[in-house]
Amino acid sequence: VSASEVLCDHLPSWKAIGKLSVMETDAGMTDSAARAALTEVEAGRSAAARRVTTPWWFHPLLGAALAAMLAALSLRGPAVAVVLVLALAAQVALYALYRRLTGLWVNTWHVEGMRRVTAAATAVCLLLLALGVGLELGAGARGAAAITGVVLGVVYVVYWRWVERRLVALWAAAP
Amino acid sequence: VTAPRFDTVVHAPLRLQVCAMLAAVESAEFSAVRDELGVSDSVLSKHVKVLDETGYLRARKAVVASRQRTWLALTADGRRALAGHVAELQRLLAPATEAVAEHLPSSAPTPPQPATAT
Image 1 (cartoon, one colour):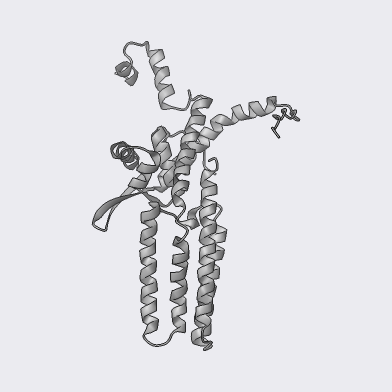
Image 2 (cartoon, rainbow over the protein chains, first blue to last red):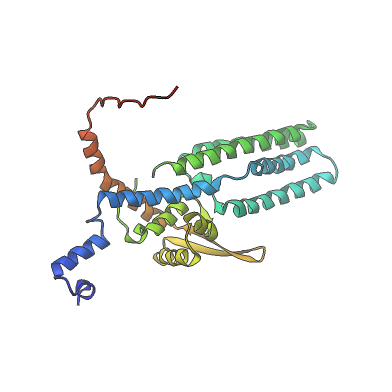
């Protein structure tokens, strides 16, 4: 017993097969149905775009935690360890908060059209980190880690502001 | 470039929305998807189950602050299926778009502008 006989026993087989093919393949898909389906895709992407933007204070706080981590090297004594641990804990807490606030986890490396800027921003951050640590601990330039830490924090905030704007623009665009 | 391929699993309207939302991100929390798409837990669960059984979606449960949260992520197969399906939809629409473009005059007259009140 074929599927067409089971589902449509009141129809001749040529009609039933025609109906099934329309339901189960794209053979009978009309332009308006295809357009409607693409609208569903846009709706899904827009849903992601609506959630991706964080409150204005979020990235500055994370940038400050990042800056404090590097700037801690400019301190002396037990304060170094205390600031390092606090800054690290703040970052972990803020990443958890990001998940709670947005309900999303985004990897900018996997987003088409963002890989080059992400690579550049990562390189700049690593360079600043190396420069700060090298000047402070290697060359003995007191305060160098604090200055590079602040620059690192600013770079981080600028990069993430760009990421959020770009993601909203990308996801709001047609598929 | 993804080959156009109609996918009956992805094609259901809500599943298309879920897949498109998840394809944009690495993962999304169940409640975020539910709230943004405006559906109930049970409706979303049903569609998530279908996608999960097809191997297009991976659901991971995590306990955060003594509350269980479910994170959803599209698998590589799911991303490929969605990309192929979208390519197929665009391919189906392409002849219609081209036909409209062919019938449009190359230099269409500018429509009259409405008068503005001063």
